[in-house]
Image (tube, rainbow, N blue to C red; front, side, top):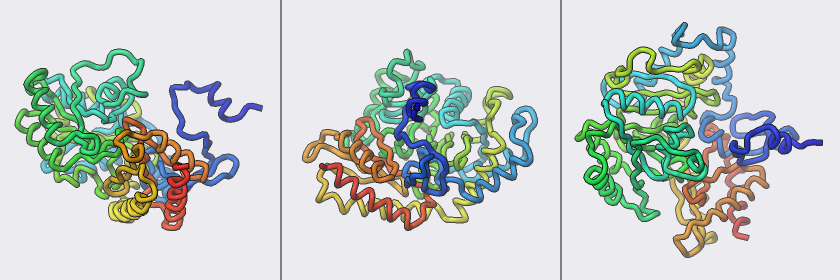
Amino acid sequence: MSTMTDRKNAAISRGVGMTTQIYADRAENAEIWDKDGNRYIDFAAGIAVVNTGHRHPKVMAAVKDQLDRFTHTCHQVVPYENYVALAERLNDLVPGDGPKKTIFATTGAEAVENAVKIARHYTGRPAVVSFAGGFHGRTFMGMALTGKVQPYKAGFGPMMNDIWHLPFPNDLHGVTEEDALAALDRLFKADLEPGRVAAIIIEPVQGEGGFYETPATFLQKLREICDAHSILLIADEVQTGFARTGKLFAMEHAGVAADITTMAKGLGGGLPISAVTGRAEVMDSPGPGGLGGTYAGNPLGVAAAHAVLDVIEEEQLCDRAERLGQRLKQRLAGLRDEVPEIVDIRGPGFMNAVEFNVAGTDKPNPEMANRVREEALSRNLILLTCGVYGNVIRFLAPLTIPDDVFAEALDILEDSVKAARG
C-alpha cells in the first residue's frame, strides 16, 4: 500500500520542497494534528502567515460571512466595497506622511513584481538595487532580486537584467554599515549612475537570509541617498509585517517611511492576499489596466485581512510579540554556556533566530541547525531553518500561542538543542 510520501513523490514535482512529512488534518491556533492524530506545536505559522493563529474565530467568521455573499467577481470587472475599505485602512496604517494608495494582489512575489513595475513607470528608470541574502520571491523578477542562489536561482537561466546586488550590513559576518554604504558609493561611481536607478528594495529584517535586522541608521541613510537621487525606497514587509516584529510594520522601528511597501503573508491570516501601498502620486503613475490580476484582492482574502487587522488591535498582538520574543531569547541565552555552538540570538518582537557556528570558530554550522530541527520534530515541535549558510533556526510561532503551549514548546526546544550536541 502506498504511503502518503510515495503518493506525493509520484504526483508532485520534486521542485516543491517539504520541510516535514506531516500531512495536516486539522489545526487550531498554534497546534496541528495529522491524519494519525499526532499533535504538533507549530513554530512555523505557515512561514509567518498565521500570525493570528490557525483558524482564529474572528477570521473564520469573517470568511464564512463572505462565503455566503460571493467568492469572486474580479474587482476589475465588478468591484466591491470591502476591497476599497481595506485599501483605506492600509493607507492609514502603512508608515509615511501624505496621501497613499493601495493595490491588492495574491502573493508576496506578485506584490514585489508590482512594486518594481510601479517604480519603473513612475521614475522612467530601469535599474533596481537589492541586497545579498535578501529574499523577494520565486518569479523571475523575484529571483533576480533575491540574494541567494541555492535553491532559488540555480539552473533557471538568465535573470532579469539591470538588477544590482549590494552587501547587506551584518557585523556578525564581517560587513559593517560603512562597508555596505561604501559598496553603494562604488557602484554609483563605477558601474551604475544613480540617475538610472528606479528603486532600492530592502527587507527591514531579512527573512530567508537569516533573520538579520537592518540597522536603523542604515535604513535612515538609504532614505537620504534615495531622496538625494530621486530613487524610490521599497520596503519588503512580506514576512515582517502585521505585528511580527512588535510593530505593525518593521520599518516603524527605524522611524523610516518607504515610498512603496509590499505586504502579504500575515495580512490574510491563512488566506492568499497581498498588497502594495505607496505614495499616491507614485501609485497613480501606471494607467488603468497596467496593474491588477484576475484573483487580485480576492473577496475572501479581503474579508480575512479586515479581521486580522481587528484582531491585532483588539488582542494587542504587537505588545504580545515583544513579550513572547523576550521569553524565547532569554531561554536560549540560558543555554549559551552549555552550548558553545550558539553564536547569536536575535530578532525584534517575535521574529527571532538562533545561529550556530562550529564551536570556537567563525565557521557556520548548518549540521547543528538541522539536528536541532530534526530533534525538535521528533518531539513534535515544528521548526524552520534559514540563512545563506543554512545555520540558523528561525522562530515564527503564532502571536496568539497560548502561554501553556508556549512553555511546553520552550521545554522541547531546550531539550532539542542539548540533544543536537550529541
